[in-house]
Amino acid sequence: MKKIKTATNVIVEMANQPHYTPLKDRFYYKDFLLLMPEKHRRHIAKIFIKNDTLNIITHNHIGYQELNHDDSKNYIKILIKLYAKENPLNKFSQVKNLKIFSQRYEKAKPKLENNPKKIHPYIELSLGKFKNSFENKALYDKFEALRKVIQNA
Image (cartoon, rainbow, N blue to C red; front, side, top):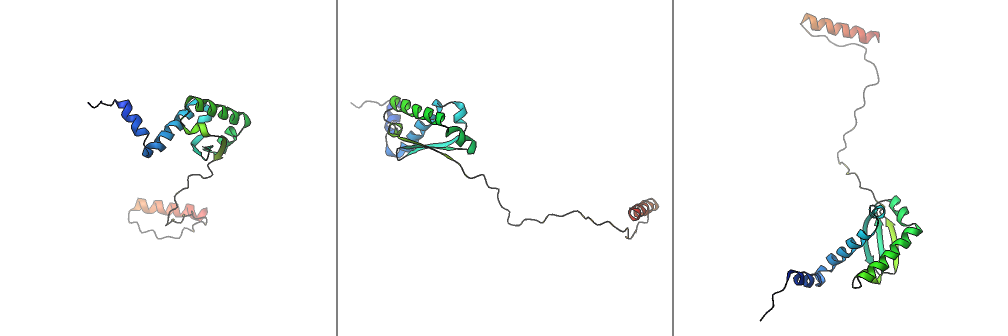
């Protein structure tokens, strides 16, 4: 008779398949980040392990300076050792080095192909020479008053 597998057994079997190892690694990275204090966590953009080195990428140069300090590096190395003891089957047990990088790019603004030329306001003054073609007497008088103001300016 065949045994019915529990949901936990099915999830464990799926997690052990090679297809899901990146997902499993991300779970360990996230779990490791939760051990770090909030002041360090807010500066970290991404972490990954490659060639026995834990690489930490920060959002900006301020995070790089904060995490690259000797006390912070020692604290992170201690956390790596503690986490490797608690979870011996993950990649953190193989970590020997720690490298911290800063993202060197900023979000680029999209370039417009047809940049409209900026219209600059006129600097030269008007001479007040324009045609007043209003037949309404009130409007005609107002434009004539405007012409006198422009000519006297």
